[in-house]
Length: 409
Image 1 (cartoon, rainbow, N blue to C red):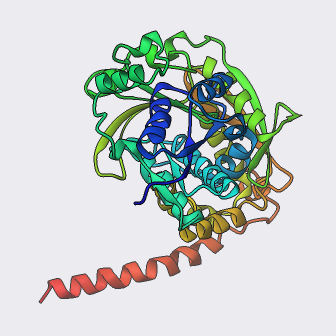
Image 2 (tube, rainbow, N blue to C red):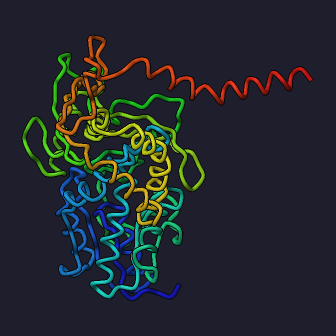
């Protein structure tokens, strides 16, 4: 790849991406434009502006953008309509943020006439794949620079030496080995590495960022009601809220009850197994509530079909194929199933668990007169079941008859 003249960098303001910023300048002599996304990670992002300016970035080339509403509305909520879980457990908090960041990187590159984008993902993780597959789908001509696959800064010591040689400020706690790595956004917090690398050792409580240990959760249960329209949450306890506000509110409520903690050894797309601790309090409540409203509004055929494609849909997101035609096709199917998924769910939050206790909807398919154990006034003729069973049993009888005949030979 020829040396780029202008690069848009996904920039957090932290030590690693600050080193990448300076490395791009010294290695290629190129102009750097920074992009910092406010995804609801819960930390002050303005220091990233000051750090970028300190490293010689022009003020007009520093972009700090609040994308919280876009993140939840256009990425998290569509994913939750599918009840997506990777490997049956993981709510895809890191995975779903990457296509949004990539989208903005590519858009900025196009606006500024940049010939490349750059990211700080390591060569061992999934994020490099997600960033670069998304970029390829959005702009096939864009170059992608992944310094962790190119440079010789292969240890924490070398990184710190590079930082000191280039006058990059180093926080005091960065001079030692970090106990673990954290990635956060409005949907979840992900912790990996260091004290978490041995899956045979229980993770220490101090790893938790936004949830209390379940033993410290309140002894009193809390009730919360979530209202849905066409598969998306629109209100909490009767109060209408924006998508990002709904997720932030559920995070706060769920976090204090110890809800949404997952200790998972997952299969990375690049081939290795990795242990992570994920905290998704709001998302865990939202998934339970969405399942609850689907129970009374979604037809069995549509629901079972949707459940059957969910693992494939979740895998596409995990592997970085958000912008693929197959994900978009599955999304269209999923969204079709959500046309009548509207109503309200009441949940009980207690000691790490969110449980549906009631649900109601003007678009409910639940018919009490059909299911009642009392007199149903002719709504359901139980004699019909005999023919239903007889026809469904026909092929089983034919198989059994054939097997018995063959066994006698």
